[in-house]
Image 1 (tube, rainbow, N blue to C red):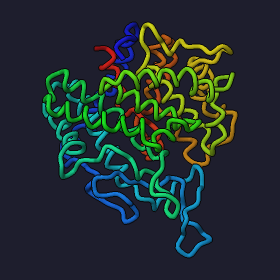
Image 2: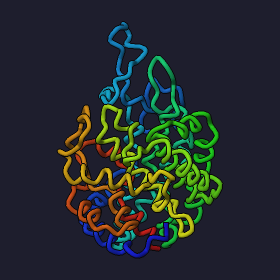
Image 3: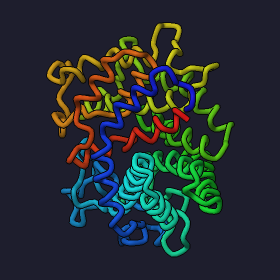
Length: 379
């Protein structure tokens, strides 16, 4: 990530304007007991207390059977009675670590860094509370399956963690034992999502799920020094994901066909941008990669920008839910400015809200604190 230097300082300065909001959130986490997946359990889980479990968001009780089984799909409509305690615990941990780490760098107060390290140790490393580095029971469908490869998208919210851990370690705020323990955990998880059939299935889903798999694999590969997986993600970006998901006009038809075409179009572009920011090098710049027919990441940005600037101009159907809660100020806007130098992206990010009160919107925002990624990229 230490390569886009010309515009990085201005983007970082823009994100530093969120200083007060970051510190306010960090202060709340500073006084909170860490969360763990062992804090709660579901009778529907086929795993043990250290195994992550969640239910498929869009699966609802079957109205045609006495026991509601098997659950049935209602795409785009989240079932409010599903078990999401583990997802909430994981996301709370991620948000705490990201904000606490950012607050340390903004203030140099070591209490923030110490708290971040404590959250990390308890969630990933302590025998009593750690999460197992696998996702056998993610997004289960009651009455149909105990887990699915699609569940791996739940851990997209872990991608801030390696970035924070490396920054803390590099600046003397994390001990070597903890850092190695975290690298070992993510190495094991990367191995699992790369070799287990669930991971292979997720890698090959022909929509945003495969992009999110690659984002995770790329982040964990960078953290653990796995060059083979990093190279695989680059190859898949060029040869599979961009060619098979982007239309000639820069849109993403597989997302537009969903019941939330606007939100999913933003979501997939955000994750493509994270991949490019993460994996590009001076010798192999994914921001400048162009297919023979002219499709490129820039074309995707050019397509979506007018509908971010004026959401009412969206030419496709309205999202079944939360349509008017988009867009938010997200990291892909900062990354686009860094890569292309077009200040409209910086201006768009600056004027949009950065933190949504809507859980569904936050669930589809992978990077919670862009400041950490910019700080890491700056070096």
